[in-house]
Image (cartoon, rainbow over all chains, first blue to last red; front, side, top):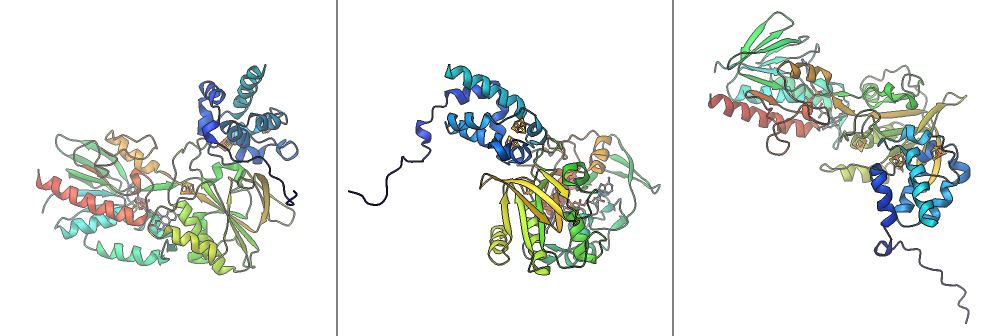
Length: 110
Length: 338
Ligand SMILES: Cc1cc2nc3c(=O)[nH]c(=O)nc-3n(C[C@H](O)[C@H](O)[C@H](O)COP(=O)(O)OP(=O)(O)OC[C@H]3O[C@@H](n4cnc5c(N)ncnc54)[C@H](O)[C@@H]3O)c2cc1C
Ligand code: SF4
Ligand code: SF4
Ligand code: SF4
């Protein structure tokens, strides 16, 4: 029977099921990752963001929500120019953070 | 009563404490650096959340201390700690021996030109919250044209919540001040688009949330969640603001006739300078350190030295008044116990 619509998988972020191991590992190396207040200064100033979708703010959020694939997709657009580190009002060394994310999450995937 | 009481700073806190001490029978001495009383309140136009004229409150407070000994345009040269009292030397040559000193030295507004990316002092269309109050009061500001404005923006948290600027603390009053000023601009220019760029909105006080709802519902002020990252000027002489609209997850840019920076409240160097003469400590936020931040806000770590108002952290006028009254009572009890 065709009701004229189809059921798509739920887009709910189920925090009960998020695997936090990797994010905790990241936090050990980059304690400041918890300090992000999602102000968007990094994304707004990023020269690559508009074309590639890269946003440090969104990467941090995605990783916290267990959406590693989304984060990995965004990170490909980063040129490691460090502009975001200069504007972060919480003083997070975002460039260093990006490098640590790439290292940790790449290792896990191998 | 013979006991001397020296009050350093003739703003809201100093004036109210003096008035209460006079009613208790003392003759306090107010030392004010500027040539007039009232502190920052003397610069403001209307006060949130009821749009009370600031000049009414200042006039009332100044009227209450007509019997006090007031030294304006006077600074503290030094303070010596004697055995059980203090010797306060003033710039007008007078020295006072006292057992009681009340610090009501207030705050200082963050120097907005330090956030270069916002263009204060570079672009004419960028002003501060203080400049806007001045314009409301006097109608004079060469940077503001008399033509109707099409778009006005407010940047929250300028020099506050900013580790790069060395001020991690929230200034507390600027969210509600932005709402107030946005409404005032809408009243002047009903056709204008008015935007507030915020990270979090702190509507903590009585009727603040109502004021915010009114800004949205009755005046159509637009609130955009994102911190402004850059400001530049276009060829028509307007300013272009860039931010991320974090709720939409997209970059935003908007062209404005006027951009108002909500400069924050930071510790007053005039306050710490005098405090250091008698080795009083500052707290981790740079403001003067109370004996206890819950139980004893108005006491210092030293006997006979008291605090009231914004010298210990960002405060509203009613909070400052309440502390000034509380400090006056503490001083009265202290003198009784001598
Ligand atoms: C833009 C803006 C708008 C605001 N609007 C409102 C509002 O609408 N409603 C509200 O409730 N609050 C408002 N506030 C907060 C309000 O300004 C403060 O609560 C109030 O000014 C605190 O009073 P105070 O006496 O502690 O300090 P201040 O007003 O800073 O007064 C301190 C005084 O001490 C003097 N002084 C300092 N050091 C020395 C020294 N070493 N020797 C001699 N004198 C000295 C100074 O010259 C000054 O006169 C606003 C704040 C800002 C930044
Ligand atoms: S380092 Fe990467 S994320 Fe940061 S501003 Fe440069 S390109 Fe953008
Ligand atoms: S600038 Fe810093 S605090 Fe703001 S969203 Fe980016 S990482 Fe988070
Ligand atoms: S009161 Fe609002 S504008 Fe002021 S520092 Fe706090 S969050 Fe920022």
